[in-house]
Amino acid sequence: MNLLRSFTLSLLLFFSDHCLLITDDCCKANPWQSLKEGDQLASELLKQVDTKKQETGPHPFFARCAPESNLSESELNIHASRLAAKDPVSQMIINSSSSRPRIKLDTATDPLFQTAQKVSDTPLTIIGGSETKLTEITQTGRDETLTCEETGEEAEYTCKSYLLVTLKEDRGPPQQGSLEIPSYTLYDGWRGQNGIIPRNSFDASAQSALKHYISSRIGLPSEQVEVSPPVYSRQVVEYPAKGWTHWYSIYVLPYSYRPLIKVPQFAWDNRCGALEAKADTGGCSYVSKVCTQGPETRLIGGVSVYAPCWEETYTYSCSHPSVNDCGPLRARGCVQMASNCKQKVGNVCVLYQQTYLCKGQTKTTTHIKGGQTPFCLDGNCRDQSWDSNDELGSALAQLSLLKELQGQFKNPSIFKGDDNYCSKQILSFKDCCGSLGGWGTDLGLAGCSSQEKLLSQRRKKGLCHFVGTYCAKKVLGQCVTKKSSYCCFGSKLLKVFHEQGRPQIGLGWGEAEFPLCRGFELEEIQKIDFSKLDLREVFEDLMKTYSPDKLKGTATHLKDRLEIIQKGIIPNSKNPPQQRKEG
Image (cartoon, one colour):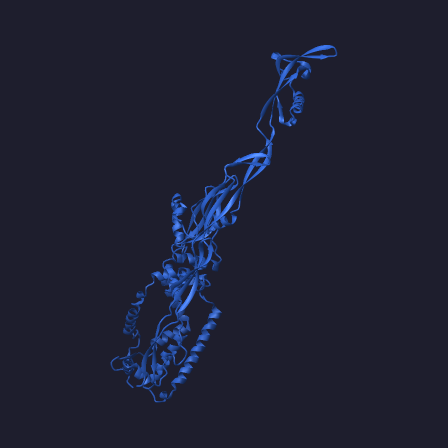
């Protein structure tokens, strides 16, 4: 707004000054009244601009692609000429340009240039009178003391897993046994060759009878007993009965049985679910797994049970979540004054509160005192107070995005990323993913693949976005290998642009096993509101590469461009230029 007001004021001063050359009536104009009218006109114009912006939205031309975007340059010129021939506004501009009189300005004798030269030589005297004086005042900006949060060291957390034992009844291994029985219990004492009861006589009925007989003798259910044909032992036994003496052969009855036993069943009660879930999101990494009880034999339900380990202790290294908002302060050149631990875990500080001193910007203002013509460089005419510029980081970030966009529009996918994976072995507690806080030599990355090592380096540089973790391998229904997936980009700026831009257009990251790391389509880029992007994460990196010296040539470049424009002040026209008359 100040720029528009200054421009309006400059116009008023220009015409006010040149009225002196034309008529005395113009000199009667009140400069203060003209200034007031100029301010009012500028305010009305700005209101019209704000109203139009509300009607059209922030991006009035980005709703869809114009049909002319598919035309070549030559086709566009033909199309434009055809439309201009029918458009009354275009015809008016063309006719006015070709028919208006051309005046040749002589820079040596023309009063307009002579007056301008006087203004250039003694601007204060020409504008404000002989009593006008120019002074400079240096104002020191106000210092600020600001605080921010930053993640500290990683802390180690432990959890336990306990071996649970339950007893299940089952049949044990086969046991062998035999009984001697007299022949009168076996099919009327009949026996075959070599004293062996033949198979055809050892039918199902006989087997069932012998099973019940053996069951009653050894005290086991008949279902657990298996019998074989009896074998003659070549022995006899005397058996007196009712005054008679009977002699019976003795048979050996072999059998086998599987007694019911209690079989131990093992299962682990893992109490590390919360830490494991945090490890799945990259917040924790595996450190160690140690057996803290065992090996030993314990009595469980009257049964002696041996296990090589009864208790395991897991150790995780975790980073504490933090807003990590100190980067923008360092990017501004603020100086750290203090560091206080905000939260501890044991003797480890996991969260710091940092204090920074941000020096105020020094400003030198030029004041014009005296004279009669209102001239507002010193702020006497209206409030022209200034605020410190804290938008340099945002401007650099958006300019860097525009630079990245150069040459990308021919590609079907803009700012494309690539998918990366790392693995964690549950049984061996081997972690090739690591936590967000950092990777150390103690993590044993030497045993990880080259792709996993590269991913760890890219994550440390802030180039990757975490997508998710999934089970990559199961054994007997248990997950033994997990994998985490990431989308990585060529710079931190592109990663942040994806993280900020995707939610605006409803574009997700896919699933953990199949991450969606594609780039943006041109239509999607057009839908993103760049003013809503929070790019503070990259401010510090951008300011490291920013150099004010790069702007030193800007003034010279503009001066050269103005000279070129001045040399071409007389455009081509059908009407020859005329010498401007004096007076």
